[in-house]
Image 1 (cartoon, rainbow, N blue to C red):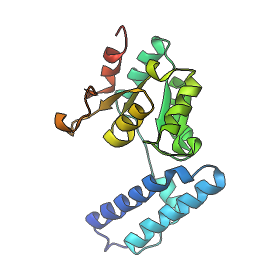
Image 2 (tube, helix red, strand yellow):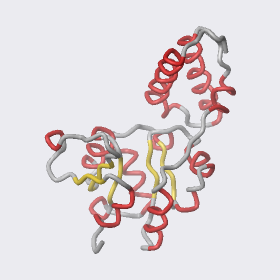
Image 3 (cartoon, helix red, strand yellow):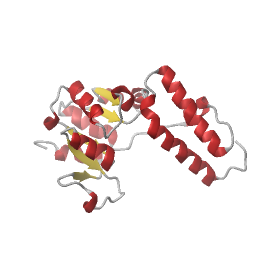
Length: 195
């Protein structure tokens, strides 16, 4: 990478690539379409930087680490013998990412927007998760960190949402009536029936 690219320019370019990915993640439905999506993401990054970044270099540079509270929270839900499904706006590689993070064994299934054919807040991903869990909407709880995608999507599907706010301080005035907010995944169990 040329030395004249500043940290600010790099951050700006990465944010542009991430925004593009978020908008198009559902298009990575299989190996071929995922490769095409990754090529397009690399092209966005390359255009922003004025320097060609191959897709394989972009993919190899991405690292994910779970939040420190994720494993214990999932283990606690497993101990309660609850069905746990990860639902995310992501491409078809979501299960592989969760496996690399050491979380896949704590999940019953994984629903990416690519698998569901649409992205949250559309109800289809939520309905697929309910089907896989063999669960009625009123029996489910969805934990997510966005108002639009998670809270409104879950509510539209008839699922009770828990909004995870790790410190951004979403004002109560922006919360739909009755939406409960947690600041850590450790708090999930306190919001379950009999918790």
